[in-house]
Length: 596
Picture 1: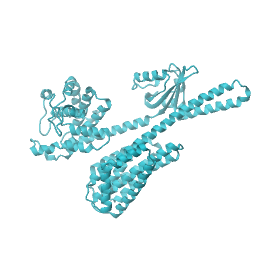
Picture 2: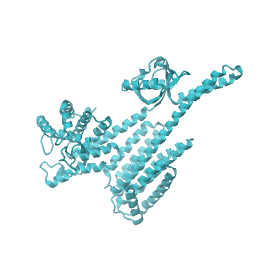
Picture 3: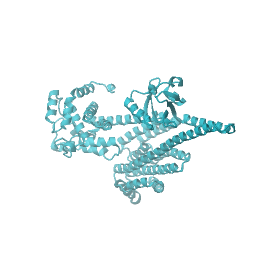
Picture 4: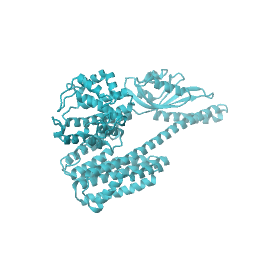
């Protein structure tokens, strides 16, 4: 929904400026929205036809927007109606909630969402007015309506949010970006001033909306934790109730036939409780040695094994090779210590495919506090994990393609950014960076020269030595790349901003743009600088021929401690074969089909 709101704002500016503004940004945002719809269609089986219909309508509208054959107010109302239909799902969920505390949290979350949507409407409409540089009475009235909706939903937020989120909301309302959009809104609505930059308005208003989105996501995370906590408490309550009924049932055996009805009633209730758990979760029990003694239908269905094939077998028959033995050792030690263990486990089905579950394992103790057996209750989260992985792959692919755009401007192929990414990954691994840091660096390093999109062709592709003035212009590409990403609150794009800004700094302080020295330069910048220079020296450019290996190696050694971090130079020569293998794999005669 967040991407759909951005597309609405960009489309309004594009139409109002007669196709002169936001062309590139609109194309990227449409790609993001399409990715989201693909995931909806793939995973939301009950609404598949609805989303396919919406996607078709959206495609037709985009064609009209591209050809400037529709009006801003029609385009705006189409997107707004679509967003409101999606928001209506929130209200349906709240109606089914009985718990008063949880219901209040969901209502405050919805108020936040509605405030963000009203801000999104204001972003789109004011963007259209600024892009057109003139008053449009119809759009102006729509802005006032959106502002009224925003004021109402904001007051509801202040009334329903807990103090924790009230403080965070107040921080947003006191930010410089929020004050800026208030000022521009006043100028447009009250003073009919349309001289401000529509791009600046869109960036600032998007920053505020992203802050609302971040607050909304944090609130949702807390709600989800509350739901999970209540679900866990329900499971614990069930076990306690089960034990109580067992105790009552056993006790009644000593009091004669007059309480036979109570025994039968208790047995019936126990059976109902068991059926309730079996219907809602994937359940299995094992003896003290870890051999399966019970598996419900859901366990059999997800694993692909029959109950006869499972009973009596060790539980590791469904263990996936990706799960280390040490992880299961830690789990086993925990439950043998009579403690509950919870975690995420990847398992393997009978046919070799995989599934992922969130599992809680509880030891069942007897009257002597000895372990009798273990019960495991699981929830299938396979689709959720795969969806997350798909989103990550889409994001990585988009960043690679953006990096390739920057290289294409300087007549380079996409192989350069791929090689730089692989070199950076090797350097980061042996430097000792954490796995998540390596992932961010590898994914973002292709963006190191994205700022070159803002450098004129006559300078970027000049075969001769640049003049002093031309060199000053060329150096601004690091600032341009940094400005593209610096305001994002996403860790990956923050990494891209750092790399774009610092990959021309030198270890001895003689680089640009800030003349940072040694460890003042972020490790991401130091690694990308080395990877970029090594690849550039071995590649033909408009201003130089390819260097021979011996000449490259000689320069890298000479620049140890000057241009480059000494430790990175040492890592390079210690693992030279790996770097040369990457270079050979991603050479000009390779095919993208070789990409693993």
